[in-house]
Amino acid sequence: MKTNHIENYEVWFVTGSQHLYGKETLKQVDLDSETIAKGLNASDKIPVKVVFKPVVTTSDEIYKICEEANLSKNCIGLICWMHTFSPAKMWIGGLSILNKPLLHLHTQFNRDIPWNDIDMDFMNLNQSAHGGREFGFICTRLGINRKVVVGHWKDENVRKKVGIWARAALGLHESKGLKICRFGDNMREVAVTEGDKVEAQKVLGWQINYHGVGELVASIDSISESDVEDVFNLYKKEYSINTLDFNSIKYQARIELGIKAFLDNHNYKAFTTNFEDLHGLKQLPGLASQRLMEQGYGFGAEGDWKQSALVRIMKVMGQGLKGGCSFMEDYTYHLDPKQSSVLSAHMLEICPSIASEKPKIEVHPLGIGGKDAPARFVFNVPEGRGINASLVDMGGRMRMIINPVDVIKPKPLPKLPVACALWIPEPNLETGAHAWILAGGAHHTSFSMALNTEYMEDFTEMTGLELIIIDKDTKIRELKKELRFNDLYYNYRK
Ligand code: MN
Image (cartoon, rainbow, N blue to C red; front, side):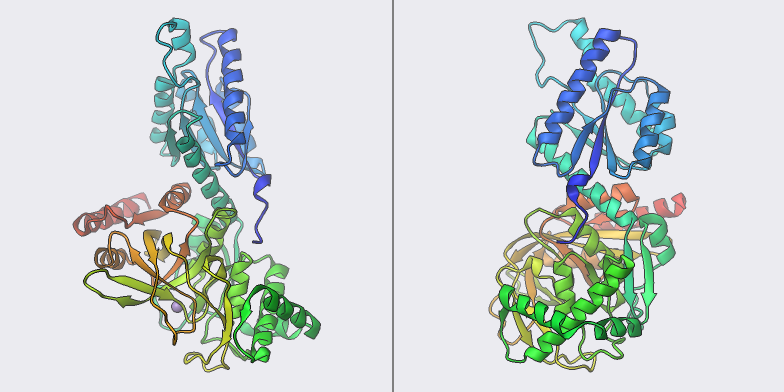
């Protein structure tokens, strides 16, 4: 997948202390901190470098490290640990300017209390239990969103949580520089694909730009026949070809190369198409969009730039993990009283990164759009856990809605030549869909089998986005209250 190199990124490990306990104690604090940073750095649960920074003991040192973190190109977040008590008024200046994500690791060097040997020196050296509370107070007083992780630093679950936060921080880093290309506008009359692009840029950093489809057609026409042949040969090698209509497939190869060249020329990492806006194209970009998603680009159909950006960001967050990520749409229900489920798909554009088997390339007519029969990938999605994420514009703020689902095995669908997935949303379809509709969730989502709710929770903390989670704990009455309370909160905060 085409993403930035994950190994280039760093989170800085910053330890707070003070001079009250003398030089010897501070020396030990420094050594212990370095050991913890190295331990975290060696963990396969944390995908980026954990860089040890010398212990900070004064307001000036704290301000300086926050300033350096802000300016560093590779630093995507700060892990702060209070080994001893670090008077938190010292942190006000630094935390007030910090613009990178913050994780408060509430741990201590030793796991167990050394019952027989513990004395006051040991207590003074190992006092995260109250040092961490002092730090927590000032973060809360300053209104700083952060992740708090509690437990011993060698514990695998603690490391897993740090790793999830680091991946969310990668997502934020991607978000802040993300450029999204809209080929054509969004679909006429549709509400949920609309949104305030200024608000999106302010909160998420997205540069969302329109290009007329004529510019895309020019790029597609400029692709050489031999380049098209090369990509077609690659298709033959990588996928099963289930048709003799090679020309239709080659046309999608040409679209793929044309879109890719255009995106790369302008540094776009995500794009949208719209079947109402295909002037000069012979087919709706089906296989082409699927292939580009597989290569890591974000995609949204019908001009849905919010979901396109989210697909890209979630692909970056999940890189190297098992399970893919795709643009998705809730399509039709199986309302069996024993077990209701949703069949999800799109007209064409589902990413093969979530395929359970080698994708088949087929060509079939498409009733919508009035163009030639488009080539597309057809495949199923494996059983397992996934999440749906949807971003909607509530007017003045964006809301993220997350719903975990269990993908189950569908019956054969011989007359449905698209990639699709059958799933049961949490807690079940009746409550899950009810809650989704009350929350205003879109029919378009970004669907990931690599990430879970916690990744998106961390991402929304970092961005300040509103988050509605629909899962096994969801009760409709409580959700209604949450939505109303959130309206008050976000209107108050404006
Ligand atoms: Mn759609």
